[in-house]
Image (cartoon, rainbow, N blue to C red; front, side, top):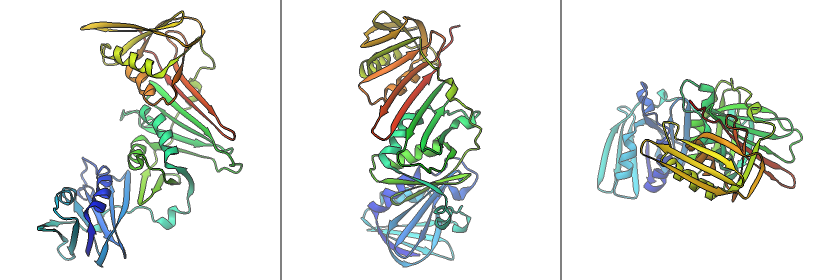
Length: 378
């Protein structure tokens, strides 16, 4: 292998690839990056076995080759003094020289054959596929990703359920068993839509969100029974799917409400944030109550207490006796809420608290619901 390439282009790709490398693994070859050449590109791949990311960087190739380099390669590229980098591989010793300006490094690599292979493009191109605009998929992830469980003992809840029916209605669901985020969307012009049901690891979708950022281009998704592949610009990202043992959680949403209030989103977020400063215990517990046309917010701990009232802009139903809520769960949804006003439904002091917003368009609709279970008093 012998090639020339530009530092900035290479570093752009390495910064994205680096996050996939596992911090702990008995497999030493996974703690690095596989580099291989084509006629006019350098292909770079990192993997944790559960996730694999491949990208390419334009390069002037003089001699073909492939090798796995240790993660220190990332730091070397960051520190080289010149814009142009020359990479040479000694095929027998698997030693790579990295020359840039006045600096020259040597790294010993590992046989590239040890690295897990990404499913061949000729194969995944035949799978079921969907295409999204990047802002569209980012909008969906923004509304559900934060509610995914981090508990290793709840493997199903560490994933996000993505399901579509024959009419082209999409359901995206996440839960940590204390709260539940549900995004539903209809797609126009899908009379022969192919139904599917996938349980995608939340960690994988978090990586997709990181890769997409504020991109505007399209994202193609290819999937089969146990794997999903996302293609965006020069990136090909593969993830294993979780075994689908996801329960039917939609029945957790109540059919009605006892109390419904409407108030400015920003005002509610700032008030709850102030209450959270003195929230009690590991659950960051605050108390909410509805009296007449006001929402009462209260918190206390061993170091002090806080009380505040907010004037409502709308109310239906009864007053609400005090309900205890995890302030972090409450704030998580307010921080991603786009609308100026927020509708909150309560079902008594021991029933779930529901946030809901529905958006109608000429040929489609979106519906978002977020449920938080109250904290039961001792």
